[in-house]
Length: 253
Length: 285
Image (cartoon, rainbow over all chains, first blue to last red; front, top):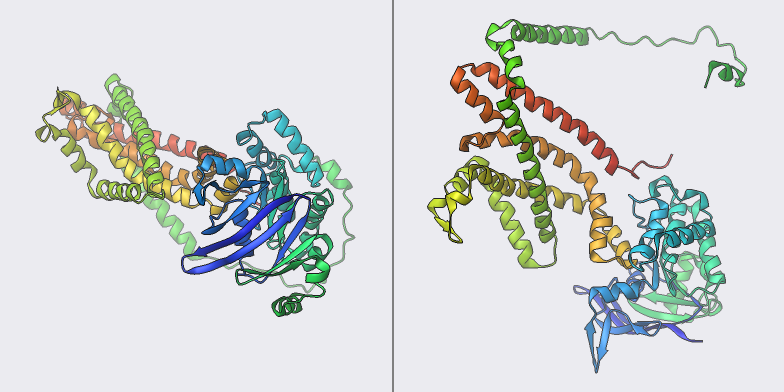
């Protein structure tokens, strides 16, 4: 199977604080990778480097064969102009912990915005596909609502539809259920589960261990800016080799 | 819904209330009554003194209220306000963008501009621009005094002053927009200009409109200061009349009433603009 995401020795610091200390990770096309780890372990930062919302200090990240944010010439990486980075990002969907829906736009306009303005799709076509996406996440009747009129779970499903509207090759989820009331978590996980079943390539940062066990092809455990161990859920979750993974799982399970 | 349909709504069977449930008796607030009477009496006295004071010469006020020269002055006040607001906010928005940019040189210049023009009283600034010919007698081969007519001085002076305040209003508005909105737009691949015009600015407007409305009213009244450099605005046009007729009070009343009328209309307009930019902000039912 081909490799969708190739992360090679990525380092990243905020000031004097080293957040990523050499990350190597490959995500194969059609697979779901779930990233677990205590807060501050660098998992959200790693996810944000994949679509270049954070620049890396060292190392390189390729998505679908193209180097994110840089152009390589010899042994040097040159930063791409913003226009190019934006074009690369349209192939990657990103779902935020706090949804970040555009509050002044209706649900429909939230979804239509990127296909129309970034991909130059005709509006009519984009609207039709947005309505199909809303049906798919179970919110066909909410097209004309404003985000604040929806529950957190509904907002996150709209955010997923918005990310899907670009027909991305890769979906990134940054703790998609952490800001939700407990009774709303299920409806969002259901949507992500459906996407996984259809073979969407995804990286999901989450604290939902049961969900990881069920959906993940690969579970990655991070601590202190490093990948401690990775493998199928049966190995990492049920028979962890590293002491730190065992300690973490003992606390959250 | 008619009362008929209401009657069909089934109600819970009435449970007889025990006879000894105590009733709440509101406290009597005699002090409130006394205060209301006192205030209304004072107000009546004031209104009475205005209406019966012959020196107001209300007949003259009515006569001059729609006279040609006053209307011409009103027109100048209105368009001067509009031009200053538009140019001031355009420059102010540019200054705010510079202030928030990653470029330290742009940030410093923007900060310096706001510091300088907020520090100079507008009256002093108008007089400086009016006399700028003493510093630069010629610009591009043209005599400065020919270039900077009193009206041009008014536009330049008021705009530069307005922009300094508008910059702060716009900056506050932009800062009020959650950073996550910009990140979401970046993640979706929206271009810089699209992020600014479609995502940030419309949401910033919610915080910008109330202080901007305040500034609009302030600017409308503030334009009266241009009468000191003989620009024929609303106030100056009434002054021209009373210098001739000595009917000082009634003509100042003409100006007062016009300023009040226009200010009230602007306030009304602001309500609608605020409603427009508040869309999507009501929370879940």
